[in-house]
Length: 118
Image 1 (cartoon, rainbow, N blue to C red):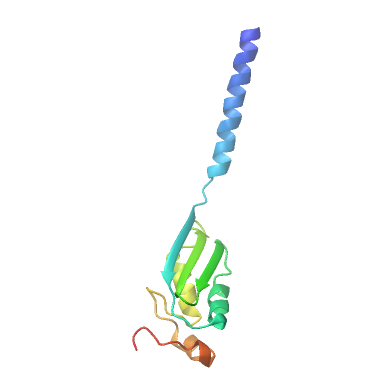
Image 2 (cartoon, rainbow, N blue to C red; image 1 turned 180 degrees about the vertical axis):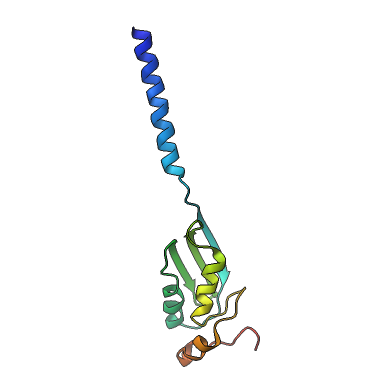
């Protein structure tokens, strides 16, 4: 009887550990990326980071001096490609996409940076 009880305790413990391990890994894939975004000032930073207030984005930080964006995101909810498209939609050039011309024209004068193709 004692051997059976010990065996059941060990098996139960292993099952609990396996279940907890599955919860921790789940299907979410947390990714981090760095890429360049053209812009000039703190107002640019606010607009750029504001464009990434979307489901799946954990954090977004744009450095106005280096022009580099660091973004952490759940790749099962949003792709890096979509992230760059969202930034381009508000008027800012990324390494892959030219900012929307109409949105760029509507940016405050201090935010109108030298475009990639100029």
